Length: 298
Image (tube, rainbow, N blue to C red; front, side, top):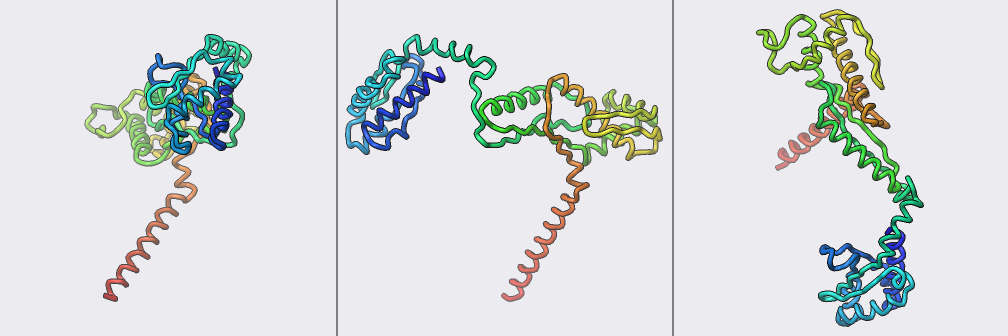
């Protein structure tokens, strides 16, 4: 059907040019909202009615005559019908619908793929916080994001896959303190256990491995635990690496690959957050200075 539609579009453009030079750019085929109306439809006759100063249906009759003279339409089209104010409905022959089978078999795994269009696309998906295992919601986003990437890649786009990794901030601090509490023997339900802490059993596993001095390695990091229950910063890095590794394993089992893991922590370590804050402060200082000067001049 792809080849058939391409040939019909080219023939439609030629027919439109014969009615009015430059009109070939208006060649377009639509899918009727009601299947009984045909396989394709075109509104070109109505678009040409005003510049040609003719009734749309009269233009449609002329256009049909021009289309019937095109070999593509005689080969693939069974009937052309005028509907409403000037729509032209197109009914295809069975051979046109069967032609796609030949295209699929010929194209094989490359069927439907388009050459490079020179455009780039960044798709950021999954991006789960490293504060717990992946769940079914993440799996859904993984499948959806991967499908979007694959689809655009087949249509000529250069796709860049990114996972935004929230490895800094309040949630990571909570992860670290929750791990430390479990390492100290404090568990959910105890009087010392804060309500905002993470209570999953995986926190106990992380704490046990930290106390055992284990090493965890993820795609972009590796960390060896000190085993010191007072080493809160060490627990923070160990817990993030631990959960990152768990996520890596799940994503690998899902056959997902990313071109880049963008780390939230890099915004702090690179100085970008501080620079943004300083820029904002400088702008506010200039604004209030100007406002003060303007008020003084009143």
